Length: 251
Image (cartoon, helix red, strand yellow):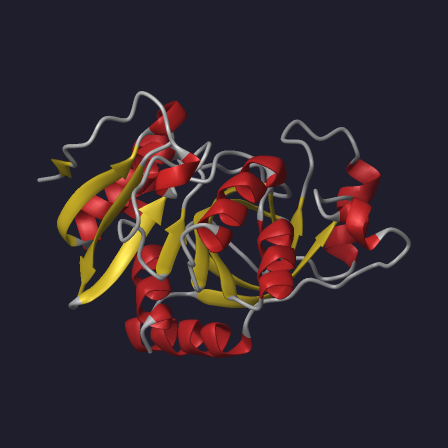
């Protein structure tokens, strides 16, 4: 059962460390944060994997929950769809709530014959056409990558669990309804395993603020085979991904 905190959330106040987009109070956000895009997936993951769960944010309908996993404080907070949305939440989680370990958990589209539906991909790197950080980097093609310690721990956890897992590069797209088959062909040609919409900016921000970040995603559809998981199967297929992320965070 999720317990709603007692303080009001109709507006947020910077003076109380509550931010424009996160209505949590000091101490409400754990140092370890899991970031699904969908706020309802955050709710599902919190109810399924955490103990003593309480709702700490519902500003603008973006849900965040804090509880414990094996005695360790954990926050599971939605990030929204796309890099601009994730950038807002991750900036505030880091700068205002001092989050130190941030792990994206979400769905991705397969871009390689090496991956299949329900497989887990641990993203070593994330390519992109652009990110919210592009204006800062200017002419530099910065290469955002995962924290190696988290990546290695995630692979170890997946191996122990017997989960079919792949490690490599993914592509963080700017758009969901893509009309660039030529670009997708080049991504596949160069070994990109999957496409999603958030990881590149997460890795950029982690590098900027010296935090640990990782992206662990589940293949929910496939660009080459045109297969897709039915909506009712998606949550049941995502449990391994969440468990891998938790085990990696506290390895």
